Length: 463
Image (tube, rainbow, N blue to C red; front, side, top):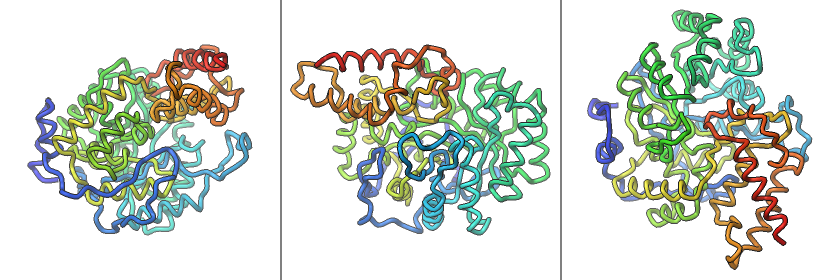
């Protein structure tokens, strides 16, 4: 990153942001297809560059990181009959994971991010198996001390056990980027990293080289974020950032992405970005927002707009994406091979898209699974996913006077029963509230469950 790019004002208005992300775009946009939740994009006829990946230099150590990072939080699973998989069963499709990792490395991706908690605890093992087949200097591994759950995970013994198991599962003798994971309050910080001595231990591990870079990932309140950024000598920080969260400040305490970004770059700390698609929601935005994107570029996927937005910010060294399907991986590689920064008109279009999305009340669930398992068996992420999908595709039966009401009503109800077993739907919620404290997005889950349950019951009665 050159000096001009790195010089960033402390506070930015819209005009200043456009200066940051660039005001010119190349004449031809990278060709991409319409994004969605499934693997139905048609990428087989597209040229996927192998030597055009955009890289950012980590100013702390000179590492050349691919702007696209592979997030190993959502990995392909072996197809089983409905309800066959048990919570503690490793049902990851290792062969497909290997294929995705091989393809990513062959096309310039060199950042792979995982955690002991991802994929029911099997992500690190799958990641290690896939990456160990490649020379160690071909990739950078990031993982985390995810000692937030289950109960008692924060103890010294359990935290140490988790730390050492990461090396074993990843098949490495050093970790390039290590996070203190998902910390959002002073109480959790003290309990999980100070009282048990783990923070001191991690800094000592960095001194001897088993950890090459030490950072943290954030979900929580703004005051605590400022404390963490200013109090400790982090090598990097990961924040949630996307065009919806950039300036959308709501009761969700962790979404002031613009302020977080500004605070981090004030301290000259490299920025890693998570949730550029808000858990996939921005790959399938409201159809009216999607219409704006198609008008701006008829062939660009919805996902590519989100990735271009995130990647256009200076000081961002990598943007993580969970890519379960080859089509998604290919689309993201094209977007960043090379990156074409968002221009003035495109930035305005995305602002208009945000207005549409917020007006239509999308539930901002990222399907991170931190709320799971629900003690009463409710499939919280899938309920929200189905609700958002119908809303965003225009198949939402909220107007009985509409000519399409009967079809949309049936599609919503049938789709809900197919996506979520009837014994795991919203009517099972007893308002225990355990999910609320676990949700990084601060979604009032019981309240939303009651609302969705009432809506579903209304549709069922409305024959």
